[in-house]
Structures are given as structure tokens and as C-alpha cells.
Length: 230
Length: 221
Image (cartoon, rainbow over all chains, first blue to last red):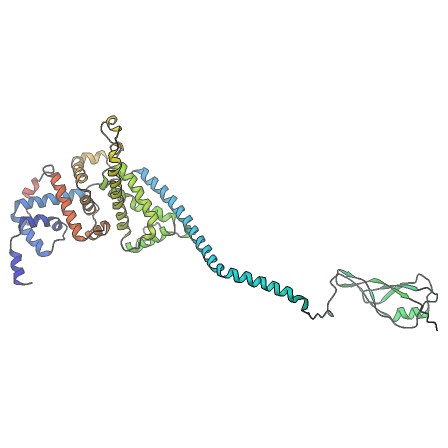
């Protein structure tokens, strides 16, 4: 602090300056040197002291004013308002996120939509054009019948020279068990020969199936008489 | 979902939080639409905001409407609260602006209206006929006259100075907070408070007795 400032500190303050500074002085916002000078001035100046007291009293009276109590109806109205606004905000929030999701999907799909549609159309067209010329190698040897039931069949006929004695064909109805063996036979013509007996004994049969399981079934064998002239 | 955000209403559990973080937490819950947070905001600020608005307007009926507008604006603009000031300061700023808007609207429209009820009610307006629940007979008996004088003096000073005086002397806010609320410089705050107090002092001169000043010694005060 310079000597000039120190001299200024001891100079008496004007009433005008004190009047203008009283408010800051009461709120402790006046600078420390000014505070001391104001205090000294108030000690000797009755007019400023009254002004200071009145302002301090006014300040005290304002501070001691009881708070204006809010009406109870206002509390209720504000709670209703809060509830309504909270609900509106939640709706807005949901709408906001849905709108953002829709915009995101739109932005994502719009550039892809035309290439996607074009690609799909050309792929279908190309496939349609090429399907007739495509040869697919198919090995059906190991396929199992998928029908619910199949008939018994002759797998291998033993050739013992069995033939019909008459000019007509001879029919033999053979009953085959689940293992593919003959369990019974019936010849409607009624002429059983040793050759027919051997044929039935040594022929192999494929059993019938029901739900893919071997089951008993019937096979009809026809013996035809073939005559070659000449 | 917004309701899944559980805001703890128990003040004891928030005791370790600083006011700034508590404000930020409340603002965050409000942004998420938590109904608990809305209720907490109302219960915490309803009384101070009403008191401020009432002191600025000096009319219970008008204060009632303005406080609802203030809270509506708070609810709808909470997303703009950036925690650069306290929540209280932000809400007070809205309240002061809303009072200013209301007063401007009033002088444009209502001033020209002819109030027919004046004669029927013996010269009383709506505000005068609404029962003031804040005043008990005990209050009136204790310091009713002085209080009415102070309130009248406050109501009759320039609204610009009144806002500064109310925020400083009634709401006990710092000069920095007042500057933030009124969006003015510190120097302007000082000037407005000084001029507001001086205007009130002139209004009350001769009515609030200055006798104690004659016995008062500033050197010891």
C-alpha cells in the first residue's frame, strides 16, 4: 500500500459516499478499508447513522417476514400437474425412441431396398432359366421305402424246371413270414409237382413291411407255358 | 421404462450427496419421467417458489396462477437444465421471468378491463377475498401492523428493484445467485438492491420509528 493510499484512508468520507455504500456495508460487501472509514463516519455523523439504522431495520424486517404459505389447493393442483406431465413425458419418451428406431430402419433399408429387390428378381430369373439344364446326381440305392406298408415280393426264383402241366398258366399263392421264408402255399389248380415244391423251397422272398418293420405277406407266382415251334 | 428408475425420496439416504449432485440426480430422474422425482420437485420447491412469486406480485390469486405456470415450464424444460447453476437458482430464474411476463401481459390486457365486482365487494378484488392461510390471528396480533406496512412498501416500489430486494432480503440469496437469476452483472445487482432499499426506506420513513437510532452507537454496533 502506498503512502498516498494510507493518507487517503485517514481522509473523512463524504456523506454522499456513505449513503451510497450503506447497502453494501450492511451486506459485508464493502472493501475492508472502506468498512473502517464508514464505521468511523457513522460514529460522528448523526444523519448517516439514522440512515444506517433505518436501512438495517428495514433489512431485518424484510428477513423476519413470515413466508407466504402456499394454499393447500395449490399443492393438490401441482401434484396433479406433476402426474400429468410425468405421464406425458413418458409417452413422449416412448414416441421419441420409436421414431428413432423407425428412422434408423428406414435409413438402413432405403439404400438396400432397390439392390435387394433387383438381386432377388435376377436370382429367381436365373434359377428358372438354368433349372432345366442342371443334372443332379441322385443315388437312390440306399433309400428305404417311406410308404407305411409294402407288399412281399420274390427276391430270387430257383430254377428247377417247374412249369405248368396244362396249357394254361399256373398260379401259386405263397405266404411269406417276416424273415422272408415261405410258411404256406396254395395252388388253385391243385396240381403240386416236385419241381414246384423245389421252387417254393429254394426261392428267396423279401418280406412285406408295415411301418418300416418286416411283416408277413403274400406273393403270387405265375408259371407260364411257353411253346416254341419250329 | 421410466418407472423403473427409482428415485430415493428419503432425504437421510441422500445426506452424503452434495447439493449439486443431488440436483443433477433429481434433474436426471425428471428427464427420465420418474413420477417420484416430479413429486419430490413439487414438495421441495412449491413453498419457496410460491413465497417468491407472492412477494413479487403481492396478490394470492395471481401468485396461484403464476406458480402453476412456473412448474409447468420447469417440467417441460428440465431437459435444458445443464447443472451450470443450482436447481433452485434455475427455478427462481424461471419464476422471476414468469412474474415479469405476467406483469407485462397484465398491463397490456387486464388493465383495460372494468371490474364490475369492485362495488359489490366493497372495492375488494379477487385477491382480497381469497382467505390467506398464511396469516394466523396470532401473527396479526404480534406484528400485523408493521408487517402490513413492510409488505405495502415492498409492493409499491419499482418491480425491477423489488425483485432484487426480495431475492436478497427475503430469500437470503447471495449477490452472485441474484446476478445469475436476473441475468445481470454484480454491479447492477448492488445498484438495484441499494436503490430498492432506499425506495422502501423512503416509503416507510416516519412510520417505522427511528427512535432507537438516537440511542445507537455505531462504534459498538
